Image (cartoon, rainbow, N blue to C red; front, side, top):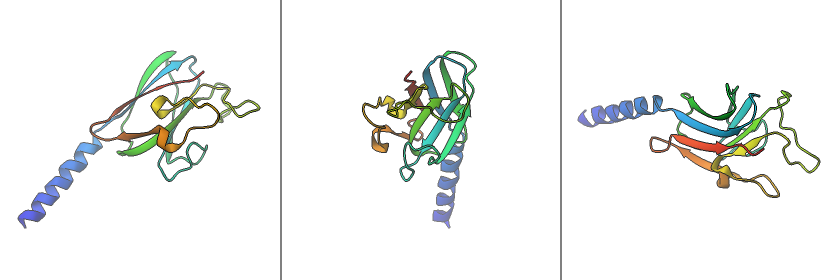
Length: 140
């Protein structure tokens, strides 16, 4: 009985602690107030394919420059992020003839692709009680 109470207490306090934790994302290099599209990928998703993410967020920045977003509904875990700013509002990342983005974009860990998109392992971040704030700079 004592063991059951201890286990229940640990589960309760552990659960309530993670519920109040914010995922803070600092995005710099914003040059317009066009919609930002942020995709969160888990390892089993096809990073960074559009539409293959675990979940996504859309944010309209209120200013140019740097912003900080605080999400309260992101579960703790391992993710890779892909962001782009939908400059023309067509709800897709526009690319040139060789596939390089024409709109501002970024990946977690601030990976700058050279000849192809980065892989999940290069971009992964761990969101937990020790890691709650992440910074990403848009590539224009």
